[in-house]
Image 1: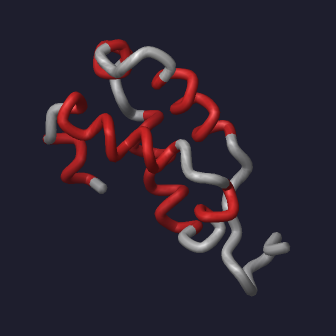
Image 2: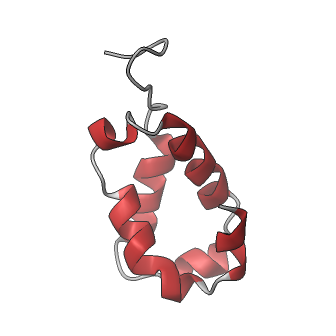
Length: 78
């Protein structure tokens, strides 16, 4: 995840948007990755977010405010 900070966001936007648009049930399988990606997104400068396609900022906001994912067998798992 740390390497993402050094790649131009425009190059990553298709993959990033696909990830944040994935359903919560998918993220429940990789809860640690969900937490790490949320941290990276919240650290992005506003200027980087402004360069993303229309609607992307809202998708990122929904992702970071989504309740934390819990994997199977973990506390909070359903």
